[in-house]
Image (cartoon, rainbow, N blue to C red; front, side):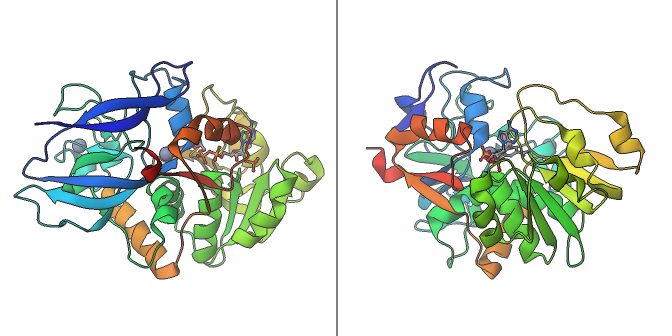
Length: 349
Ligand code: NAP
Ligand code: ZN
Ligand code: ZN
């Protein structure tokens, strides 16, 4: 018997989100039923709710930064039990047998990972619904454990903003002596700063927002560069081992590529709606690399959560009621978020 729960959904690309009833399956043998306490608001939720990536199925219930409490488990579940504090990120399933899945890179599953929302739901035959809802049922293999010392609301956005920035820092072996640049101080950007700083790197933030300079320093930045100032930008040519670009809209990536040192890399994690322009010389001249990175696999996500537990790292959040979600979207689009909105799901009743 499926259970009916309340959710917040977009009915169409141009509609504001509103309350909706959705079905959650009865937990199967390997399933964990979770009461959602908090859900972070990612810029991807906006891209998806508004069909900016042209693949949205409606109604769309966004939300992939989920934190909550286990309310029931299936007979074959071994890792979790009722009452455990758990989290779910961007993935709820994958084929588990392909090369990427065997390499613990389920986000790159060759059969297509099943995203937490807007993905094909093999159980219902429909579409997966995300965390802007009261409850979710997820296979235990895609459930994560939140260290008990972390504030749960502040931990929720680690499940996307956290892992998406932690993973490239690890992929590029960032540590003491490295220079890391972070472009855009939003949800992802502020976590990139915290992680790079905790890993011992020298960190620079590139922002268009003069009002964020003091915050950037408090979050761990050694330098803050106003990207609107050519003179400021010019002082950092050929400096960075790694630049992580989190910008969600069209912008000039060449201006940042020129700041990467010889053989260094710039990694795009931002996913703007429109294609970006690449000038070949930005890469050729110092044989720089341009790459992308997509969230992280389950093993690395748990590693990131454990790293946060050890270093006492959570996201800087602004808590909202679910009825404020449309206003929060508008504020994110104005870069007016410090630095992640988190929905208090108790507001959905
Ligand atoms: P966010 O909180 O809105 O942060 C984006 C930041 O980019 C803004 O705070 C702003 O920083 C800067 N920015 C925005 N518009 C800009 C423009 N027109 N020109 C220059 N800078 C601009 O968004 P987020 O949640 O961190 O997500 C960022 C992007 O990453 C989104 O596109 C999202 O879909 C994508 N994403 C990708 C992955 C992945 O796995 N690759 C995972 C999650 C999200 P300043 O005010 O400091 O300039
Ligand atoms: Zn996200
Ligand atoms: Zn696979």
